[in-house]
Length: 51
Image 1 (spheres, rainbow, N blue to C red):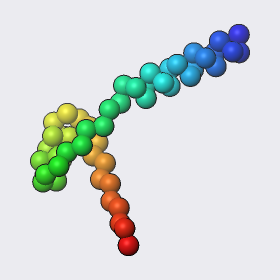
Image 2 (image 1 turned 90 degrees about the vertical axis):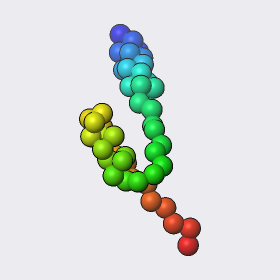
Image 3 (image 1 turned 135 degrees about the vertical axis):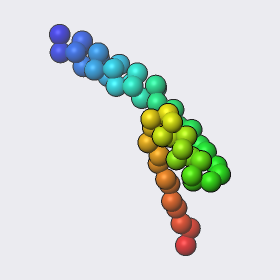
Image 4 (image 1 turned 60 degrees about the horizontal axis):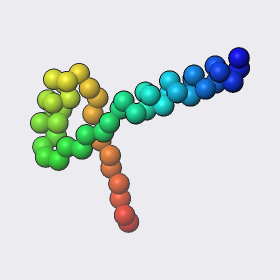
């Protein structure tokens, strides 16, 4: 029974992970923010540096 519960939990987590897809937007931040607000989603801003 514990194995079944663990497998069911794993499949549930996997299904949530598969349902989320990232959309990369390029362009003005204001447009991305407006689109996110319209779709009721969050905005992730990724910064990186090479030096």
